[in-house]
Image (cartoon, rainbow, N blue to C red; front, side):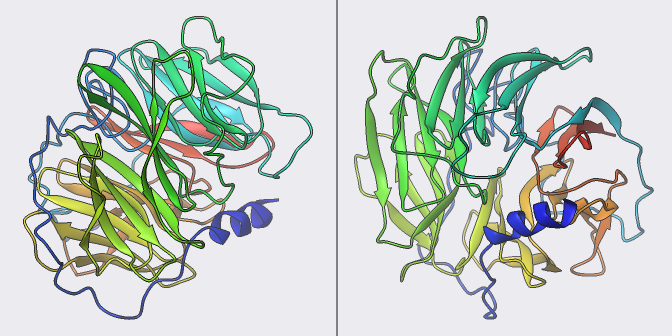
Length: 392
């Protein structure tokens, strides 16, 4: 089962280019609004949620609070770090995938099965207090819930049938998705982020397919706007919101790279850097973009300065890296391996391209986010082997 899961995870990872990163196109620099990009419990913005992880909510890309480090030291020391023990928050899960956080709680997308086109949905969204406690079911009946985000009132869940809006207090979600044109793809690469524009929350969905879509988060009827659409075969991944700009990765067409588009679509989406040809996930810090690309033994983790310049390889030779985050200047990411301590890794300051296992044993990718001074992760095993933990 673990090998079957690992093969599914690797299906969605594009092969890395053999060419070294080159000088970017236009300058990719820009302000970071409190280091966040999605809508909020407390009215702030973050890259998937908000202010505890963005003022009160977040999606599985990290918190809304900038890390304590400058972001340039990577891991600092050249000595291998000591392994740390995780605190298991929720053991015994069946394919836990992505995470979101608000001011008080952690939300978990538990898929149960990764098979497409099921006749009955056993997936569910769980909630556990950030301070610890029992997990409870918020909503169930999903098929393959994956990317999630949260604001003051709602959870937004990307499932095989589309984007669902779930009332956090009651679990109510209606009988149809609020946007059916953005079904989740089993092989990951999708993202759900909440941005704020003119006093309203909007959900941005990187579909893993050819579109980047903005959906009204509060309207009673579906109201969507296509922010970017590529030709057939395009894959849009790794959305992050910084103020009113959406950053995302494009692969699978003749113009791959890192793109930016205004949340209001006042100007069309534009490619900012053409050196990222097979990007799979994206993170923003105040000074740089963290990007994963490729897989199958040639996967890499890259750091691209926001002020412009060449991408730097932080790690290579990987099976399928995803979800890079930065905490106190160190870069962490998930790796596509099964039942192995290498599923959660940290970049060391030197020698170059050196990474170390953080400590826990698990199956990647699952999810990974920063929560204050800690990391929250999922180990994406099936049956009852999956778990959500915290390190240190």
